[in-house]
Length: 63
Image 1 (tube, one colour):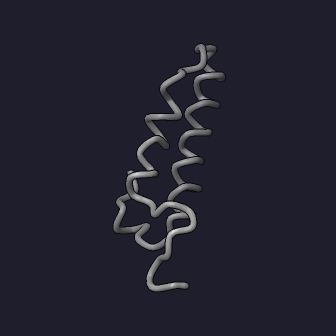
Image 2: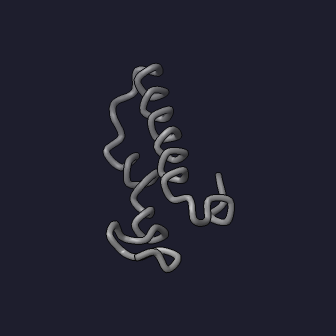
Image 3: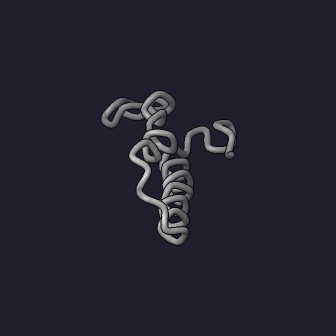
């Protein structure tokens, strides 16, 4: 799993990276004929709001 240090200051890339893993997981479940996993999105993406600044907040002194 990618570390937060690798993506520090590049939240959009972190979201894209984890979103790709989420999409691959969904595709894999479909390929195997498994039912959708209602908790998969939360496991992959649910914690992002804890590590990324809220939209509209100032970052790195930007006005």
